[in-house]
Amino acid sequence: MILHNNILQTRDHKGFTLIELIVVIGIISVLLTMSIGSYSNVMRNSRDTKRKDDLQKIQAALEQYYVDHDTYVVTGGGWNNGGQGWVGYENGTSYTTAVTRVLERLGYQSVPLIDDPIQNPGYMLYICDGGQTYSLSATLENWTDEEKAFAQTDTCNGGGGNGTVTRYGKNYAITNNPYSSF
Image (cartoon, rainbow, N blue to C red; front, side, top):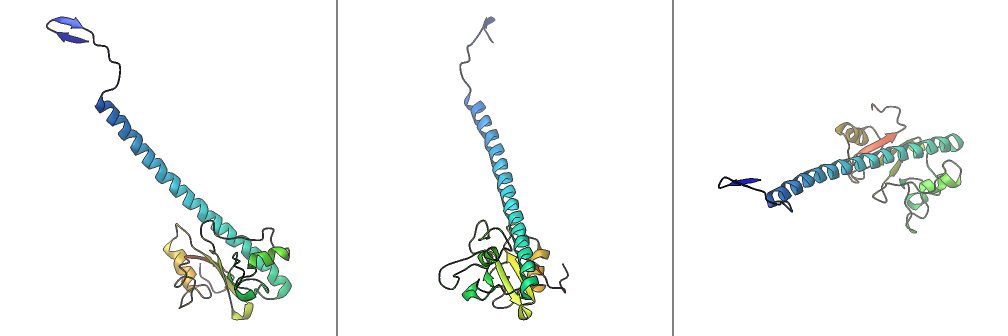
């Protein structure tokens, strides 16, 4: 209602003003931006959890393999069938059979190919100390400095020219190294 020249008039509003529309669009934009950021973080954390779970599954299979073979070298899988390297990768040449496929064929795990949810190849296995020590590594999206330091210093082949951290950018690892401090 508008009071004009002491006469009360009513005006019919049939839409929104430009300012009202801009305010609503601004609020929706802010809410959308916040929800997309939260969703992206949830997805990164979910993938990191999967990576850690995958490495634990491979580790359990390796431990069972060791009991039967007295070595962690998974014969017939990995780089040039030498039992190490990219664990879930096959390319028909230097990686004819994945380490995880060999472990599955022998009954140590139920899935033939286990690898990173985004990058393939993604998970690495290094065998050291004549087949008695190993490190499994991955690249997390949300990693800590402690996890990266452990992967570089407390696992076999974490550092150096061909190290999983220095050459391949891995920042998370698990190992059977009895001297690890993590």
